Amino acid sequence: MIKAIYLNNGTCKQETIIENINKIYIDKPSLLWVDITLEKGDLSTDEIALLTDTFKFHELSVEDCLFPLYNPKVEEFDNYLFINTHGIRLKKMNMAEFDEAMYELDIFLAKNLIVTAHTEELEFIETLMHKAKVKPQIELKSMENLLYKILFTVVSNLELTMDKISDKIDILEDKVLKYPNPNIIEQILDLKKVLLSMRKITDPQKNVYSFFSRENNEYIRDSFSAYFRDITDQLNSLNKTINYNSQMISSLITIYMSSVTLKLNETMKFLSIIATIFLPILIFASYYGMNVAFPEMKIFGETGTWFFAIFLILASTFAIVIYMKKKKWF
Image (cartoon, rainbow, N blue to C red; front, side):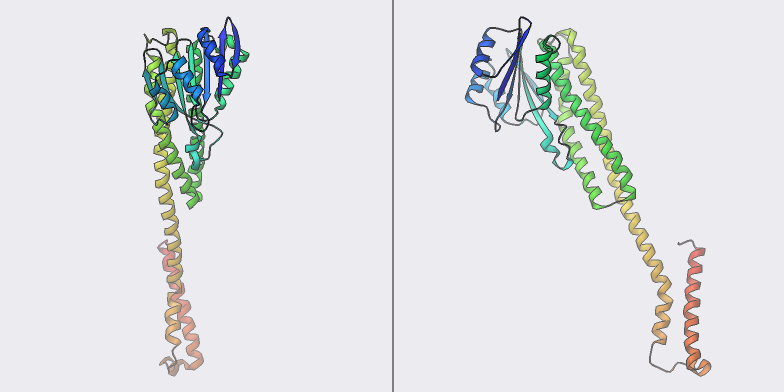
């Protein structure tokens, strides 16, 4: 599916027919933004022709749109820039299925032309296009401004995602000591995978955004370099947060294991105390439970021996309890 909005003589219009987009590009509008959603992960023949024949993009760049790139990058060609970046769809925040929430956004940047390509519809792209149609004098005032809005939104969504992950870590931190169970460690490990996935896409993206923050850039005027430096600072801050949360996850795993061990030790201590208290009962019950004539019977008689056995059991049990109390074993 393809959509395009363009600005010509101060008027913003939308187009969805490829043949008309060809004509619009030939007429050289003030700014043309073409957004392509790859259906079933593929480009149609007309879309490929538009990119390669009309816009003169290299076939390798077009091929990069079809196959996922795990390392964000910027490539310079004679007549355009190819940008590959990654982001997070905020609606899908199931940590166990976090990889499905990640998306790849490919951007072609030429003179007065921006082409965005992605495999699934992105809500923020729809929002930016709607804003551009309503207020073109603000959203489409320059190519640099539009590129900044796109890249800024990608990084901002990453930051919002990291805020949610930080909140999740705080909740788990409270639970891990009170209620350590397999479900909590499963959530912790899911978060660990999420942070690893985010680090893989955010760390290399520093090179992408720093490319636009440098001065004397052929595609970005110097007056806009400060905006892209701001995005670079955001990304650096995000990477620091990821590293901090990764350390927190490692600490949570250690705390979880310590908490489980502590509870196990408490259980074993309780069982050991019970077994020790009942030990005299077992010993004397085993001794006087034998079907033999005991020497005590000659002294106390049969009934007296029974009371004597009860006395020994109670006395030894109380003696053990008092001893444990003095040792502060419980």
